[in-house]
Length: 208
Ligand code: PRP
Ligand code: URA
Image (tube, rainbow, N blue to C red; front, side, top):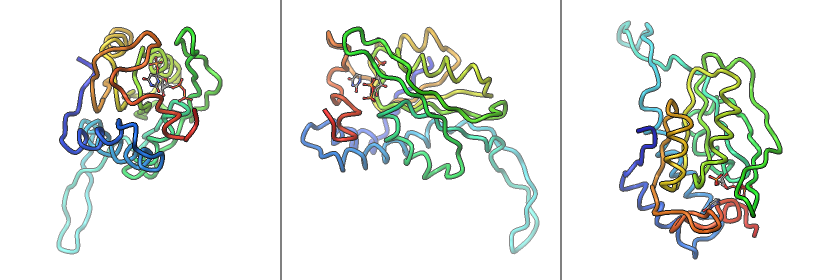
């Protein structure tokens, strides 16, 4: 199982407000950041630690710190940008990759229009972020790109997944753990998630 639904009550509560069509753009952005922060806490549970020697004001001690400081946040444009701030509040020194993908409205296939990733990822964990995992075409394309740069590890964070999308990413990228706030019922005939939250990019940026 590589897709993990994080059923924390705080996440479920915030997600209910996020989904509501009456929720404003301002509130939508705030909630996206807050849910991302909570998901990040869960998704980074297994980051490797190393022992270091420090001195407290009282005495020397051996303590733990993250081994892999080379964390890279990789938002899928546009909607993934709304998840960056929540992650940066925990990892303020993270580097960023930008992955420009746009789903074709007719075919639902992702079209690539931009890709920019930092160098030297051999010791880095790359966390791909996108609110919606629908057909998984976008997430799988993003992971394919990122893997070409040989990072130590790839993780993904999404707000809402469809069972169809989850099955695809588990099949195509069984080594990538994906953390989601909710697993919804299905995709509709336009490949939108039901019940979902509508078009994440439009709700985040006030377009559409
Ligand atoms: C949405 C969403 C994902 C993708 C999910 O973005 O943010 O990137 O669709 O669909 P998939 O799993 O079927 O690929 P969209 O392409 O609409 O671009 P936008 O963020 O610029 O609105
Ligand atoms: N993209 C979205 O923004 N929402 C969906 O439900 C599917 C793709």
